[in-house]
Amino acid sequence: MRCQHLPRWCICDGLRTLECPLAIDVLMHSREAWRPSSTGHLIKRVIPASRQHVYTHGTPLDRAQIARPGKTLWILHPLGEPLPSDQASGDLQILLLDGSWGEAADMKKAVEGWGRRVSLPMTGKSRYWLRAQQGEGQFSTIEALLFVLGSLGLKVEHDALRLQLELHVFAGLSTRGHKTLVADFLADSPLVEAMSDLLRRLQPQSPVEKRALQARLAERLAAGTDVELKRSGVAGGLSGP
Ligand SMILES: [Zn+2]
Image (cartoon, rainbow, N blue to C red; front, side):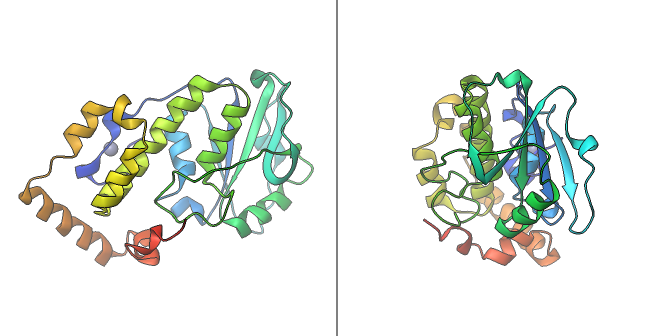
């Protein structure tokens, strides 16, 4: 699966897929499935054994298609009980609800009673700078997964996935031409150490490249393919805390 970024900011070279003892399923709202900035797709790209299911409002889901035999199913939701810490991750399946606040509420109803609803404290600032953080404690789906991995003690997997998120955000900010933000973002990023060669290759930009990039962006906007960019406005997407 390619990274979906513009060729100029293609980060496929930096992709490091990983295996994870925890079984991961993402229930993605059908509207989310078309958003280029969705982190549900990124989870699938980095963890090929994870599974993606698309939810369409009004269409009932079949538990047998999603729940994996022999695993204890956990559904991550803010209204869940605290995540138990004594369970071996190899016995677990986590279901992540990928969508806006309202969409997740809708999906929660669709999977009601399927498994144990769990939550965990998510604090700090989101690193997902491609969308404004909706409020304190609200994170992208991939960051929610990072919190789960951290809480289960899967540090190697956590750090590897975090790096891939950082790379994705870096490419997204670069595509939008947010040079200052890119610099700000990198200032706190583990990428600088972990993928310095790739960063060096991507960042130098000649005037010719710059004009070509701007032309491509204009084309994409005109074609209406970059819905996220249009909707939030180039600067507006990052006006949050
Ligand atoms: Zn690529």
